[in-house]
Image 1 (spheres, protein in one colour):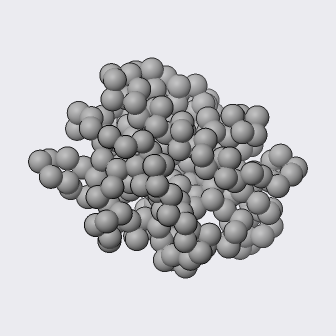
Image 2: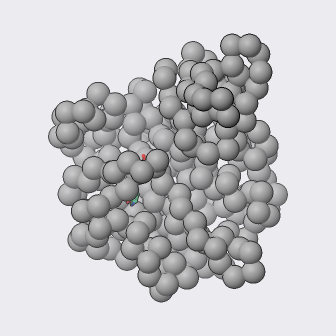
Length: 249
Ligand code: BTN
């Protein structure tokens, strides 16, 4: 299997690197391929949201993965992507980001990276994933639309200097490869423990969809599959499989 990042296709502009990878068999068929765009005209976020692209200020790319993993382990890759980004920010910039389930990366409680993982069926029951990663590198939160400014930050703002985004890209890809190999070698518990260490749950609250309508509770654990366990005030524990939940605190 070729290593993640064996080929990086660099585009000046794309609609969305995830969409482009999903719609083009030459890209989607190549495990480890990376599509990077300096600007996206129709960048997409999770839960049907858009992704605001500031040309040249963000690292925006998609990694194609054909995971050779037991089916139950494939969802862990969504968490692994955030972990790889957090590790790379530590390696390259000496930062200590936090992770917010399933895969936001935060600095001082503000989002610095968003991740959108999508899949298409491959041959023989396998999945082909596109892992879209958007990192706010240069500039300041004030460069973004007013409604987003309070909730996000940039690496340049956090470090007080422009960021070497190429070094960051290469380190994210190397970290992703290492974590993927750990998973493939049966290291799921260790990988999830690394993720868990960067995800403080104390004092946090979420609203999640339940059969009888939305409910609120405190995130308290991860299952062995990487799903989020939320405890409601009556002590019941609810497992969240999808990222369709709202963080209240
Ligand atoms: C989110 O936070 O809701 C996820 C944002 C994901 C953005 C990245 S940028 C590269 C890739 N292409 C897209 O259209 N989206 C992802």
